[in-house]
Length: 349
Ligand code: 5AD
Ligand code: FES
Image 1: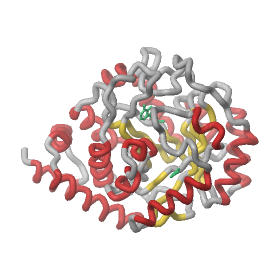
Image 2 (image 1 turned 180 degrees about the vertical axis):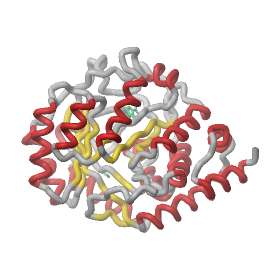
Image 3 (image 1 turned 60 degrees about the vertical axis):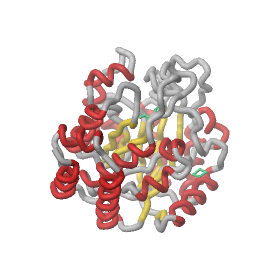
């Protein structure tokens, strides 16, 4: 195999086999990185221009029934501070977000049984009737088909559920036995079948990840054809079993952002908060590698320090308006413009 031939093929066919993806990752160098970055930016430019979409991220609950070994709000972390936002608090975040120009609200939280279908359905109905020109994205983990369907019928537009890893054995090393790879995959299929714009994704540099596994992630994403794909570096959290593991690399994350943009030219690809935590200008670099979405925090400032999935998370001391203007400035500084728009995916194929 030859790295230049593989890069050519990716650019030409938007697809590689698993051995080629692995080879590309393992043997990447500055020259190939630069080439793929240029191609990714050209494709993003063709589909989305210089617009960057923003999503107002509302972290509705830090309670979680799950125990993912990497995550700071895992059930077993007795030091985690728990909170729940009320319907009124969430609606007031939307109100502030709307004034700040957000046209997508992302409701994200741990898997918290308090948020029943009745409660969420009512909440989504209220958001959609109060802000009919806005999209609602849910990021609330694994739920039943019926639940996903009911929330979709209430008006939810999109759902983010990272697959975390496409390798079954790797999944078992990141999660307790009670959490199943098959169920995660089935949830993703269900969400798609129901009609959501679906986002999958994974952490870069999670413990036990290999280049081969990353290649499997890329093959999975190619086949699944998500509307959105969230990737960010793994960052340790001091009160989890992975506290002494190494952090994921911003450089590899940026490389993979370019590869994913080339695979799926239309995909909505965020430059994540984790990337902005790993590197002070990680989000800017993410956009310059092919991303086209940023997700500033819209949670009430009082709860931000309680939603810590990893250490040193940025934006926990800021107000929503500060994050919004910070991001606009950062995007402008690299020649991009944050737009007031729902930011739906442009038609896939
Ligand atoms: N480092 C980086 N990302 C994390 N996530 C959870 N814990 C961490 C961590 N320690 C990611 C997971 C999850 C998303 C909401 O945040 O991929 O799906
Ligand atoms: Fe929150 Fe910059 S985005 S302070």
